[in-house]
Amino acid sequence: MTRILVTGASGLLGLNFALQQCARHEITGVVNSQALRNPPFKVRSADLSQPGSGAALLEDERPEILLHCAAVANLETAEKNPALAQRVNADLPGELAEASHRLGVRMVHLSTDAVFDGLKGPYTENDPPNPLSAYARSKRAGELAVAAANSRAIIARVNFYGWSLTGRRSLAEFFFNNLSAGKTANGWTDVFFCPLEVNTLGDLLLQMAQEGLEGLYHVVSPESLS
Image (cartoon, rainbow, N blue to C red; front, side):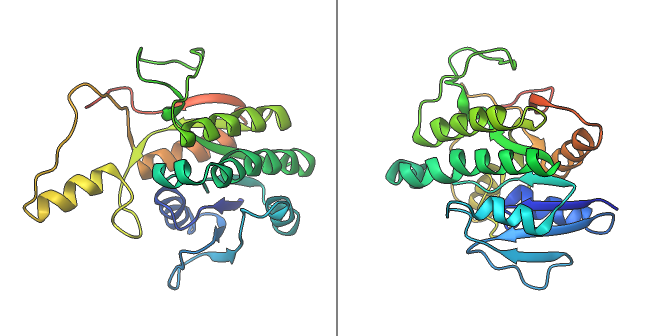
């Protein structure tokens, strides 16, 4: 049984991962403002936007694996408060990477396909990023901070779908909710994604950490859709 610390444990990936793995591993989920009702795993509350909070949490918990999902993921929030996005999406990952390197913790850092501008595609790990939004720029800065502080960390660029705690976190839920209510849901014909089902993604990330992979990976579906 592996000790795994999951930040962003009320989010789409963090919660699904914790629920799926808690029967097989010792899971501690870290939440901030979104409370969880009687989850089948240990929960800690922490405001990771505060400098030093991430390192202190790792020092206290001493997990074997850190799955870092916490982020300012709302595009509007990131645009209105770029300093917060920089702190949570860039400074915090760097802080966690330094602490995980020092403590011997296997770190899996979640990034995004939004670091690309979408003008080329399909993208590989060797393609240069060109982030266009405040959110994307902060996530790219987070990648660089993690790589600089911990060369053994996994940086996973992902795109995924599934059911969230609120039922309003993923693109799939947007379409489901609108269509179920008889509303029109407009999509795109010229934007392509390679999403994975959230539990499949969680299994892959854990396997990557257990097998000792290091560096940058695109952890996505082999097929694209619009």
